[in-house]
Length: 192
Figure 1 (cartoon, rainbow, N blue to C red):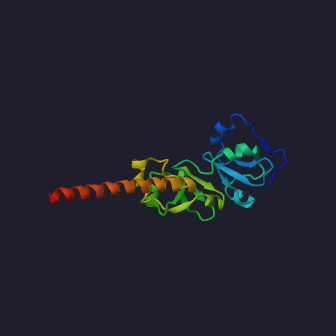
Figure 2 (figure 1 turned 135 degrees about the vertical axis):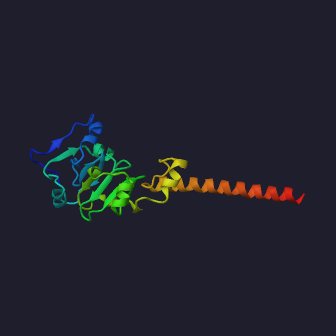
Figure 3 (figure 1 turned 45 degrees about the horizontal axis):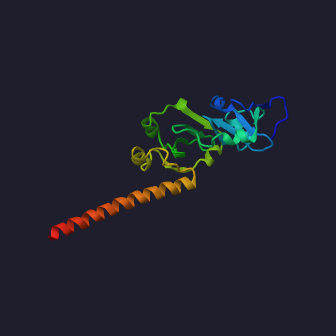
């Protein structure tokens, strides 16, 4: 809801993107829009209700109003390595490759080299917008990261996922054709 009290602040458009990283825990809203967002490590998370905001100590009366284009420029996925906790279920997640991975136990938390100071508690339901893929540590991306790089493993957009899978399929097909050609050549040479 748009606030009309004196606590509403309009941010200047120039230079805001740079200062956004300093606004962790700030509540923002697009001008003329109803949805409110909580900023965490330079990304925006959907605020579900005033009660959920109060549970994590965020004042729903101090809303920063942004022009819609500035709000749209704030990513909805935090940087890799961000550790977030949903207030609703208390689960801690680490963000990697644009998805959230559940840290199921203290052993996995410690093995990742994380500290409890790095955990960002978000309002109930705020982490639902991030795709969930399973437990930490994942078995799949770590093996591929050194081969193809971080950008190829974008699981947040369908088109990018299709492109990645198409590229991977072409690599596998080229490898199999190379192996088949090698086998045929070996058989031909062995027949002579």
